[in-house]
Length: 363
Image 1 (cartoon, one colour):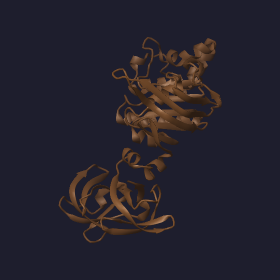
Image 2 (cartoon, helix red, strand yellow):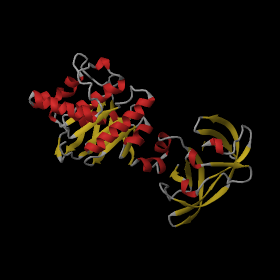
Image 3 (spheres, one colour):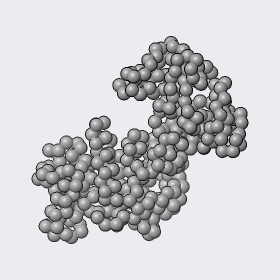
Image 4 (cartoon, helix red, strand yellow):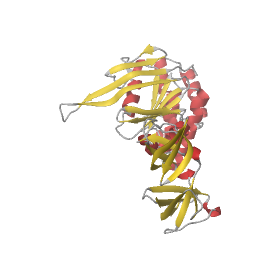
């Protein structure tokens, strides 16, 4: 496999003309990122946030309205797709139904003017790598969805691209197969050290497969970071709410000690909370608290009083919905419930949590 390189997007903007109105739509707005050699970066966000448009600009299917796309320091912003050293794994597989698996995988090698023996050697090698040995003479219609996606992946890998692009490649697969395939993709990407850009709207998929995640909203980057940073230290309410389940509890600053704050929530003062993303010039803030970080205790034994208003058994955990004293509603996940105290709807309880599990952001 040839050595991979960096991808840099500098001030990339893409504007489309609206067909219904005499206006323009900004699909991507001053997007900046450097993707390191061998890194897998995922563009994550809701529908219409600009992630697929960004991917298509990297591939060359769309031309930026302004800005630069650099491969290994070379500006490829106006270079056509077939002249860029990229390969795309599509959502719809895009396999040729009349061609065998081997022919589908080796299709791109034909344009490199390799002889038949070399093409067979390379396709056999990549089929073994993706777990398709013995399937070379079958047609795509004889394969399962997961096997077809492996063929699409092998077809992209075999040409040894500088940059590998994924456009929601697992969205047509069932949940269990998606999990298996994302693990396979990640394992192959790390093994081959290919610089990769992955697009998805699935938060779990992004968390499990990425070196870094770019959270996008309305064409802009909201936050860039590793999965742990994005989950535990979101930069704002949009990021916190988009990644997993979260509780937002209003609070205010009642004391300051260097980089730590004393905050008041629900009439209770919590001391020595790390300031994190909080804007220090304001007293009003929002406390971000994940459901799994909260412990439910019998009445009178925890920090904050609450009433149980809903209880849902979900196998590995019970999801409780609680109403706090000031009518704020929060969700709590109690894992391994067989060995925990069980509470019922209508019970008066208390909740507890560690200071380090609180993340503070501005209103």
